[in-house]
Image 1 (cartoon, rainbow, N blue to C red):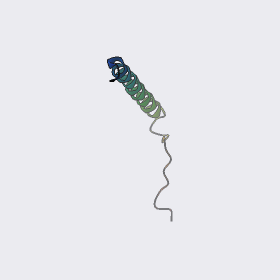
Image 2: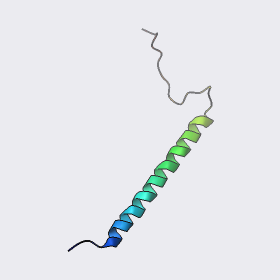
Image 3: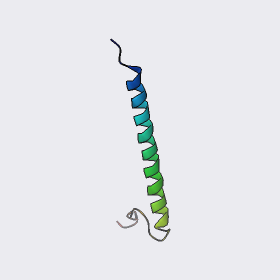
Image 4: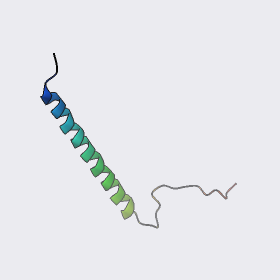
Length: 51
């Protein structure tokens, strides 16, 4: 017997919620990195000339 159509629709709604939450999280992260300013790098990178 086939599954109900409602299970597919429920999964679609859950996936859409997750996608929106991920996009929102990325926007917040980007905004936070921009707020740190150009003087403070978000990730410290070692210089290649120090060998």
